[in-house]
Image 1 (cartoon, rainbow, N blue to C red):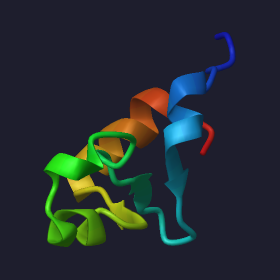
Image 2: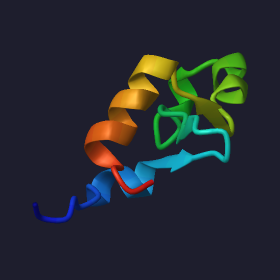
Image 3: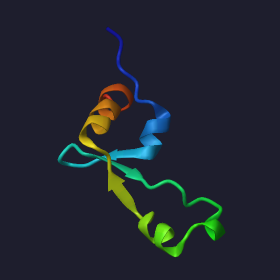
Amino acid sequence: MPKLKTKSGAKKRFKITATGKVMYQQSGKRHGMIKRTTKQIRNLRGTSVLFKTDGDNIKKYFLPNG
C-alpha cells in the first residue's frame, strides 16, 4: 500500500495539539474590518479548537501523519 500524503492546504491551516485536538485560526479578519463591530473583531482573535467530530475527520482524511 502506498504512503499517505498530507494535504498541503490542511497543514497550513490546522495544528494538532499534544492531546490530539485540532486547532485552527479564526476566519473573517483579512479585510472589511470597517463593517464588523469591535466586539466581533476582538472575538476573532487567536486560535480555537474544532469540535471533536470535525477534528477527527481532519486527522483522518487530511492529516493522516499528524
